[in-house]
Length: 305
Image: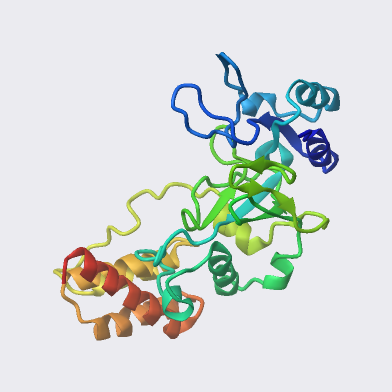
């Protein structure tokens, strides 16, 4: 198998490329499959590749690397390539969203919810357009996931935090080196990476930029508002004063705290729901009540009620 054409195809799109292990490569020490790892293993001489330093736009260097290791999977360094890649994974088990602000999706979609379902909900929640969002270069992954590629604004740092860990992850320029993805044409033990289209990479929409950008650490914990003697007033303040982009999470945790404090769900719906609506929460009272129900169920399970 010669994957040089796949590496060159990624280079032709203007991306920084580096080699990773070929399909089925196993770690000499542990025996684990490491065919997505950013290093090459030669028989009897394992060595690590510093991918953040190696990733290149030098075509001669790329050709030399794949001449030496023709079956190496090509990977793309997202940071220097100016990319944000949204990784939507398939559901790995039932009720994977339990305990998250998106738990209510199970009520509508059932116990198995894919990352694409969650991303569609996020798009609607933040006022985006799904058809425009998906009108970009996309790759299906070896594990039947879905990579959506976007141009990230220059000079803006992305967060390393996943919107919904395990279902909607992102790779960008966050952290010290940023992240990477396997390019179309790569093959792992789980299957091939296949380009779904030949579209240009579109600009990251504003709502997704806001969701994924690195945010300054708050001066104090987000959900540390006073309880006002156990009343719901401090929790209402938590929702009303939530930082941009954290309103849903603030409502979810305020509702959990209300449940823990013995506040009736009807009072939480009335007062926390009103605060959410006043803060221009998307979906209004209906979405607020769905989030509050999920939060109460989560807290009740935690407390064994």
